Image (cartoon, rainbow, N blue to C red):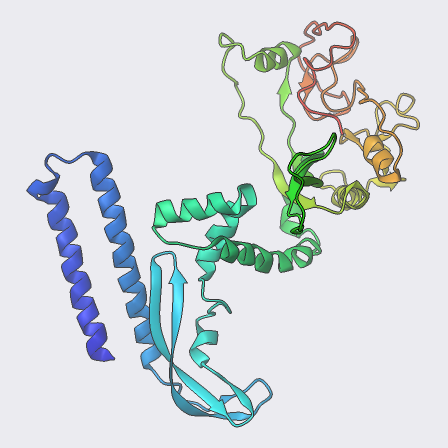
Length: 398
């Protein structure tokens, strides 16, 4: 084994010297940057595969010194060396490990546990990259991206299996309580979002397929996937004129003096179980996230899915309101959908997300809702025609 590793190391050194000679030699004097970049990438991928193979050979050369036991404690004896094929981002790598077994026991290779090798042949990194592409695109597009960039072929069935294996930890991951680090970094505004998207469902094969579809018939069926998002953010204080200029994409407007705040502790979930499952869960997560909001010195009281804070500056206007006066959180439409009621029209409030500031209040506009408590220059509020809510509503009400 040592001689094989030594030969591999010598070959890699020669390959690396060949790369240096390639970039400095006459072959690249007339080559384009694209050609040189692509050639270097392909040859570096091949060099990475050789390095990874040497790593496995070096680790597999040592035989475990201590006794090897089965999961139930049965001692196992040494049998032979077993080969394994490991599909990495560099390509296919094959190496042998020491194998132990006993009568009536399933054999094992201790090196597999030492290296945390996956149960399947595809490496954890390759599975991570494959499932990352499959979450935003189809399996076919993810397969094509891996083949074009890495030059390796991964079947669509394998990508589908990777996604299924990765999904088993989703519920346990989201069941974890929000960490104290996330709560400590929370911003003063709580943002809740929900949206639906039709997902084509795989239909069972049918013996008789109609040649021509009738009225209202479709060859594919879709099911709504409800995607929810929950995060906190700092206020983005702007005047009404600045908001209108940004929405109209005015090129002559001055650049923003302050950077736009970024979401903090963002949680995104998706389900095919419908609004009846997604929206109540979203309301519960929002209640838990706002129950111990930092900076308030107390816990906000959430009643019936709608939050009311005792520091509400407009208690008369918010009596019986269906939104959180400090966070600007509206759950009325979500609760209607969860009960199966007909959805009501979106409602704007001067102290809820995206509403136009009214006369008599401060002229500063707080995005995502701040209770109308902003301070600053009293600019003349922008006017809008009755019913024209799109212009001054940068955020969509739930």
